[in-house]
Length: 217
Picture (tube, rainbow, N blue to C red):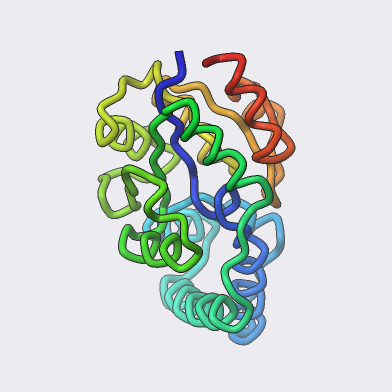
C-alpha cells in the first residue's frame, strides 16, 4: 500500500539537470579543465561532499575541484535567474493525483535544504510537500539510503509504504537500499542495466507515474 511518495528534486520536479550541465561544462572550459559528459553524468544526484570524493577518485586535484565547483555554482545561479526555473512536465497532474488519494509526499535532495526550499518556493510548489530533506541533514549522501529513510521518518511512514521517484543512478540505488519501491523517471543521466533492474518500474514522465501508482494504491 502506497502511503507516501518521496521525490528527488533536480531532474524529477525541476527540469534543471540540463541547466546544471551547461553551468559545469562552461566552468570547466573557463578554467581549462577537461570534463567529459560521461564524467559529469557520474556527478548527478551526489551531494557536494560526494561530488568532491568522486572527482578525487578520478585523480582530480583539490584546487581544481574547488575552482570548478565555485564557478559552476555561480554559472548555475545566473542561468536560473536569467532563464527561470523550469518544471518537469506532468508535475501538477501528479501532485493533484496525490492530493485526491491523500498520499503524503516529501522531497529528498542532495541540494542543501535552504536552497531547495527557495527553489521550490520560487516555482510555487513548496507548500505541496510536507517535508523537504536536504543533503546536509544526513551523514551519508546518495548512494546511501540515509536521506530516504529520513524523509520517510519526517512523514511518519515506514519504508515499505513509500515510493521513490528518481532520475539518477545514485538516487535509484539509494531508494532501493532504503527498502522502498523506486520508479525510475529517466532524465539526462544514462542508467545502466544493473541499476535499472533495482527499480520497480520505469516511467517516461511524471504523468506516466500516475497509472503505476494507481495500481499500488
